[in-house]
Length: 202
Image (cartoon, rainbow, N blue to C red; front, side, top):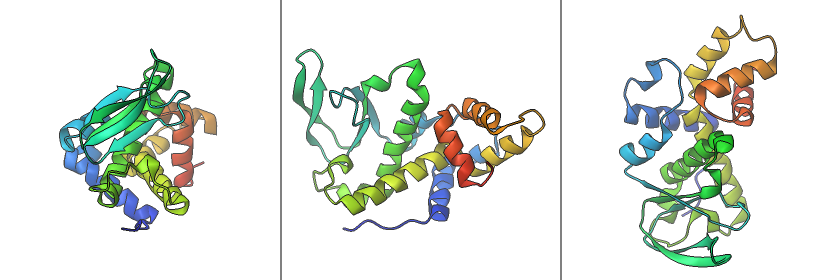
């Protein structure tokens, strides 16, 4: 099965549908950090597990589509090892479990959920994880799609715009807008900057 091309507008729609699936009135609420872990576990019935996936954090997340065996980095042994995993497991690198990387952790969770939502049809039944896909062009497309959908889920279109315009009286420069909105939505400043540029607001 080949990768489907999704336009940004379609990914925005998928993000809205996902948040409404979690709570039909969510997008009308006061802007706040999207409860991404609850959406993953309660709405999609997926399991989150934290493991060191590599020895240098080059892979931060891995979505498991089929039950089987996968690798992880055993810090005690100082080498890679195998473990059994169940379909519907989201493996997140344990290096992200620090206060300093909290925004990055939330983005990684959303990124892996995005893969599950739009790419599971490609991988279910193949025994192949998205991170191990060997078609570079398709992989680049899938990563772009997952990144965009992750931003759209964590920083909903309407809520971000409302916050931006509400902050105009007190924020005097780009960095102040980015810092304030990143704090409200509990994302990294880098992710918020990209999202505001998506909308042409900065």
